[in-house]
Length: 183
Image: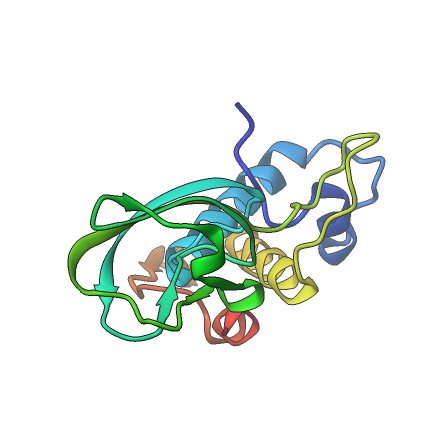
């Protein structure tokens, strides 16, 4: 199984100054893209891949219920307190992953089960692959973070005389990457 990446190898290479036909660094670049993609998904607490998802949610007590992954394309199944809900009983607000229900969602732990289709078509270099729908800012954030990982993989400072290396122990993504992935 190929791990998903939020940017394609061919789109990334020009940012790194690598010719498209140069395959000598493909493995390292691909690994950096996978690491950057995983970090971005962890930071945003969502998956960007276009596929079916299942969630069990707490009832919000409001008219809005936020699903983790979006945009939401369709809801296959929705159960509230174990009872299947009619698709006309709620409205999908696709772009922000919200389900709106005029009567409101009950308040309580793990009351709502949802199966839904959400996400974007991720970038791919494969021939015949569908065109990516993932927003450019997410792709660019992935490329920039991969570039940072390749240039200094955890090294904060170096010194040659008497050899000294300091590793970066900071947690999270660089500010420029965070700015690009803000909701």
